[in-house]
Amino acid sequence: MVSPATSRLLPSVILFALTLALTVGGILARPIESLSLFWPVNAVLAGVLLRNPRLASPRGFALVYLAMVLADLACGSGWQASLWFNLCNLGAIATIWYLMARLPRLHRRLRTPHGTLCLFGACAGGAMVAASLACVMATPWFEQSLRATWLAWFSEQFSTSVLVLPVLLTAPSPRALTRGGSQPIRVAPLLVLLASLSLSIAFGGPGAIAFPIAALLWCALSYSPFLVSLLTLTAGSTLIIAVAQNLMHFSVPQSELGVTTLMSARLGIAMLVLGPLVLVCVSSANRSLMARLAHQATVDHLTGALTRSAFTRRANSLLECRQQDAGQMPLTLMMLDIDHFKAINDRYGHAVGDQVLRQFAVTLQDQLHEGELLARLGGEEFAIVVPGLVPQQAGFTAERLRRAVQDLQIAHADQHLQITVSIGLAGCVDESPAPSLDALLAEADQALYRAKAHGRNRIELAGPQRQVV
Image 1 (tube, rainbow, N blue to C red):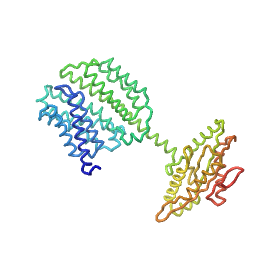
Image 2: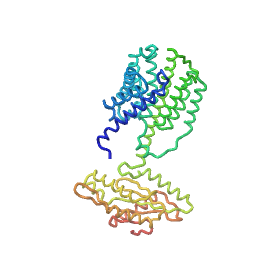
Image 3: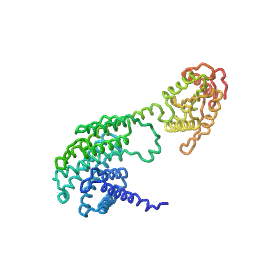
Image 4: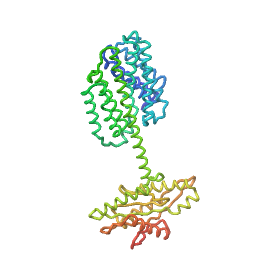
């Protein structure tokens, strides 16, 4: 077992080790005596702190700064450079974290277009802080002018943060990954994106950086926010590398003007991903809204049973399947009504009545098998469709339901309420013409009426049998 002290210390150790590893990797990946083409350390750490608010403490920021300085020193940098340039990095991290942490969680996780726009503003703010701090001490280390230095820092920090942070902020939690089922992914938008990136590099020129925008918009309409963030990171980093390596026929000589051209391309590519990220937020929000509306139209909010309209659609679908089935599959419909439910509402109040309805529905669901439909038709009246059984056979299922409801004890204050149910059955037998759903409901309702008239807490069959089960 892990002690409480170790449990509290472990996240800090992980944060320190992660910062150390990221910084060393970033230093080793950059060209000698040059700024990094990509420096994702700041964006990754800002995302980690936003996803883990407990780490975003003075101690956490101090550990990040210490790990960065130690990594720089281990890679051969001097004390002054290590202390100052990592202060620039820490300034970018703290600024992005501060601006994003003030937003509601829905915006912070990029679930809304407003959150995406705020992210761009936060990344711009962090890049400005880092670039301005770098310019304060630029003379000992940079030969370019302050303008070129500021542009170099700002464009790199801004573009990298805009590309990397959405991936971290939209990444699903491990619990969500294990809970969610795998869904097929459309391949066509991805193939078009790869083709447009290839065309951008082959065609070249400043305007070629906009070629993938249509494919990215298609991806935004087809994929989840996390996957779209991964694709924008891939597309943006590919274009930046292509520009830096002069694969797209940009004029990038080693001069102030050339650096400005490269930085302009960086900023243009970074802004390129704003549209797809905003669109995927809108598309995802619309899909969530439609799913909630579909759920509300399908499932009764109080009991979790099907609504009347959803039940009608599914029951009619079963009847149509029966008509198409050469074997004429039997089917039974039950009408159920809680006995003396109005007296429960009048005596105990509607809150208790709602509790009775919820537990009644749960009890029925526990007794039913897969493929059997349960619906709330209104008030205390429910319906069940049992495919594959004639009414006489389904009578045993109805008796099981009746006993389960009779044994149900509903806690209220210092007592337990007991309820009973009356059930009427009607159905389609082998080789008989398939009646309509309305006809089955009417027959089952008549059987239910007889069950109530004969004393309640009983089962009646419709039709000529009229026998008590």
